[in-house]
Structures are given as C-alpha cells and as structure tokens.
Image (cartoon, rainbow, N blue to C red):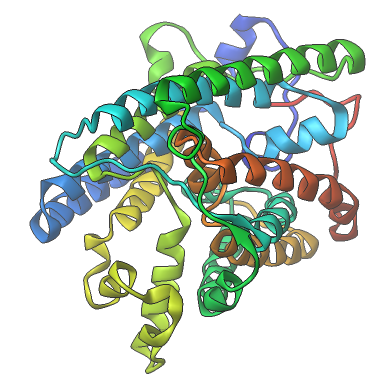
Length: 417
C-alpha cells in the first residue's frame, strides 16, 4: 500500500494555501484513545520486561509516526521505478542507506552500546533461499500493497485491506518457519560481510557502499531525465511547527530519521530494526496454544524457541511492531486521515496472496524490506544487496499480475501522492 495506495487517491498540485486549507480536522477522541493506549502499553512493557524493552517500544512509536507522516514507501518506490521510472522513492532509500551505513560503521567498529550488549549487524548467507525468498517477497509486496513496514503503518493508519495482509503475512511467516530447515539445506554461500569477510574493514566497506549509493543515485538522475516520469505531489500539509504533528514530512527528512532510529535500535538491543520474526513468533504461539508442538521446528531452535515460553512483551521485535502500529494510528488521527473503508473483492484476494508470499519469503530470505534490505545493507551484508535485486525483479513480474486482481499500475499520466 504505502505512499501511492492510501485508497489509490491522487492529489494534484495546488497552491500551498489551498493545500493547507484542505487539512482534515484532528480526530481528537481517537487520538486521545491512541495516546492512552500507547501509554498503557508502555507501562505494561516496562513492568513486564524492563526499561530496555520500553525504550525499544518508544522507538517503534517514533518509527510509526515517521513512516505515516512521510508515507515512506518501499513497495511504492520499487513499483514506480519499475513501471514509469519514478526514482524519488529510491533516491530517498539511498539517503537513508548513506546515513545508516555511516552510523552502523561507527557502532559496529567500536562496539558502542547503551545497554552493554555487543552490537551485531544482520549478516546472513546468500543462497537459493535468499534468492527465491526475496523474489517472491517482491511479488507479494506489490499484491499486498505494502511491505512489512508498510503493512504495519498502513494498518495503524486505517487501511482496511491491511487487516487481511497482516493476517496472511503471519500465516505465511509461520509456514516459512515450518519449512525453514528444508530451505537451510539448499545450496548457499556463507554469510559475507563487506567489512569483515573481505579484509576491507569498516572504513573500507563504508567507502565502497557510499560509492555504490552515489552511483545508484546518479543512475536514478539519468533515468528521470530519460523517462521524464510523473513526480510525487505533496499531500495536504500545514506550515511551521504544526507540520511536525499535522503535516506531511519530506521523504528525505523521513529517510534520515529512519536511519537514526535504526542505528539507535542497534545500540539499544544489539541488533538492527526487524519486523517479520515477530510474525513467525505470533503464529507459532498461536499454534502452540491450540496444541501444536512447534518447538520441534528447526526455526524455533535456541533463543527463538525460548520466546515461545515467554510473554510476547518480552520479544523486542514484537513490542517495536506494536509501537509502529500505535504510532501510525496516533499520527493518522492527528492528521484526521484515519478512515477505514470497504475494499473490493479483488483487493482482498491480492492482500491475502501478497501477505502469504511476503510472510513465506521473509523467512527464507532472512528478513524483509527492513531486516534484509535496510538492515542487511546497512550492516554491510552481501545478502542485503542480493535481496534488493531479487525483490526488484519480483516487482517487475508483479506488474503483470496486479491487473488480474483489478489493481492499477502507475501510468505516465498519474500524479502520485
């Protein structure tokens, strides 16, 4: 769903004064309810699992607010690039990666931590599972109209179809956990870190990745000049300090904030931001509650298996996910845009298929657009780059599948919101 899918509505460029005057009124009762709920959950998290979990939950709230205010897209960025050559979303990704890579290099090379936990990035093997998993994830996020982060913040923001996408995402992730051992036996290379596996060190790997980000950014400029794609038009907003709470945020501003929040997550819990491992856990705990022994599955070995016997509030990824949903809900009610609507049967079918593909693919690929793409590349992992390429290829195929569900692809005549 993400930036272009908020009910697929198009906003045409208008004078700033007109845009400001069209802001929806704040939904104060709902916003108050969201704030009270967020505070209540914070208290529960702290009392159950301590202040470290509470801090991670608050980082999740900030992530949800940022994603919603900027309608920061991963799915939409790939779709617009593949369909009409719009590069604004991908350019924002490169800015986000540049900031995150710089911060991660400092943190990982020095071992800096606020909690005493030695930080470690997401560096995973590259093999059949990653190639296939990221490819079907790319298809799934275009059918489900949202990636992992997009599903959560759009769900919190009132997008009705995200209910189906999220449920299917959890089911797909659980099935992927069941098949995890099979896929881990398929051919693969060992985990490869551009910093630690190549002899470059963190400074050398930082330089290589910054050069790659600059190269990609330069290529996007050439693409934009050649294809002259439609631009993304601003959402209704306001001015001054009110823009922080009521208006839309620039993509580049959100990119920098997301990078800082991811780095902060790394220093607090010792791992970067992730989303989908919680979905497998939620599915596993649900099956366990009805008598299915999921502890024997290969995926739930070690620390992951220990989470099955603990409260979900002890799982850092889960509490961050709850924070994203609530943060997006509060931001949407502050903007006055929380208005769930009915969706067409075709969209419902696509949401279910897309959620299943994303859930299954994320388990095979060691993460989603956040854990594998964002966290992997920022951690100097080769698998993050492979994930990006395969997900983009999956997006290209999905453009031919979306019309089968009655879903429109971007056109040259569109104006994106």
